[in-house]
Each structure stands twice: as structure tokens, then as C-alpha cells.
Image 1 (cartoon, rainbow, N blue to C red):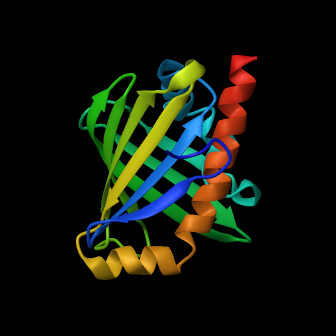
Image 2 (image 1 turned 135 degrees about the horizontal axis):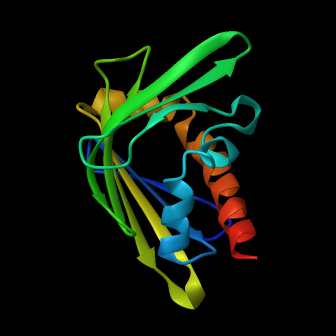
Length: 160
């Protein structure tokens, strides 16, 4: 079982990564935070490069785009929402601009846990094992610790 203080990162087959963390709020509250474009800069990505939300149309077929300015270099992330089922399932594509042919599919589920918590599970599937391995080698696991720590703090704040 994942913990509330750390995101569990595991390999799931030869092309996928699974992320799991317990968040201190029920699924509907976590969903509200994750799908609110005004809150994205408060938890998504590294704190020192908060993203700007350029587009976020949370519906099947809707698009999303976030951009981060890292010391004068803008990095873009974008995708399409494939499935939107509040408050427990969101499936989207994810493309990092420098690698447009290495896009992934991300399946997020929010499961009610004990004592009003939520188990966040994100399955990231790459087209090839090499993409998965490159994402891990690039520091993704460490980055997700910070992102999910910030998400947990934000949902806890919203609960108080």
C-alpha cells in the first residue's frame, strides 16, 4: 500500500510506470484540485518552475497545454483528454514538446481510502520500453515526489 509521505514508483510491464500515493482528502476533493486550472501552478511540476496553463478543457476530446519557463527556456507539455469520469478516472495523452514522437498515455484513478483519504494511482504507458527507461533516467521518479508532495499539501489545505 502506498504511503501518505512518499509516492511509490514501480515498473508495470516493460513499457509502463505506476505511481501511487495516499492523499489526505476524499476523491471528489482531489478531483476538484487536479482539474482546476487555477490550482495547477500550485502543485504541478517543480515549485521553482510553476507552469502557466495555456489550455485546459477537461472533457473527452478536450486539450490541455502547460508551459514552464526555466531560466528563459520555455518547456511545453500538452495532450488530449481521452476519458473523463469524475470523480475517479481521467485518461489523457502526454507529450513533452522536445520529444513529440515519444508521447505517453496516462491513466489516473482515485480510489477512496480509509479515513477520508484517496489512493491516487497513475499508470503511464510509453510506446516503447526505451521511452519508459529514458523517462526514469531523466529524474521523473524524483520529480513526482515533489509534485505529489505539493499536491498532498494543497488538498490538505483545501480540507481545512
